[in-house]
Image (tube, rainbow, N blue to C red):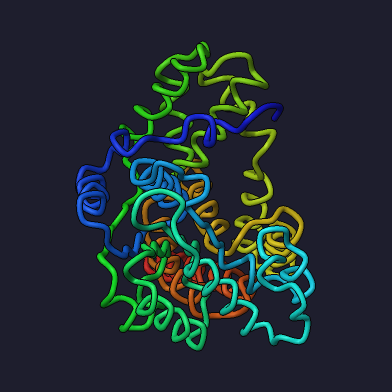
Length: 349
């Protein structure tokens, strides 16, 4: 898509956060600056809300908001961290530092410098569920040392991954997945600002397909408006069919159902490795595609959702997404065969 993403161009102000309880907790942090743990599923607006808080709190948010995505460190090599323009000034002449020490130095230096406006600055740690415990202990010490001049905001899908000393120093802000109606409201507001042609059915289709992922809904609306010229049911369906992978996911489900687990696993691997899905994202897509069609009945979907709950925990704690997702399909297909076999035996009897 050409031009700025709608998620950036229409980033919400604090007053535009539609989840009342979360908005009120952010507003309380304006009146009395405090450390926060912002928790909730992917795509619900945790980072966007944090940026809205910083814009409201700081006269110079460009300089007084420091964002550090955990992936910037833990998924990168020492050389990549050292040569990152955001961090190289902190690490100049320190090429022999261990990776852990590099991370600690960047964090400490970010917290140490004086705010450019007002009495404090905000340091955001995004996707903090991946932070190792030794790094969290270092973070705890930095939080204690610079608590008078630095507000720490930690965003995470899994607050239980944070050590108790950090959780006890932060005020929790829960952000849930938006309802379809709330998502439609956001899409309608953005479409009006963009002067895009749309109808309610088109917005409802996008909101439902997003499955509670607001970021995905907004980007899908932008893709539909650009590719289809308008946001209607038909243009949204055509656009999402082009940019999505529903057919591949249906093939994986069908392969598992037919007992062809090697084919199902191959499709899962392609979606994870080639298309960039995370394990949790692909799990949500599997459920959405299974619900959208008429192939699977209520019992099938009920068992799939039950297994998905167990798989979600495995994905959070395990190391191999493809293994857990393939096991999900295998268990689902095995349960289905067992159930159908029992029904046939009852009929024959």
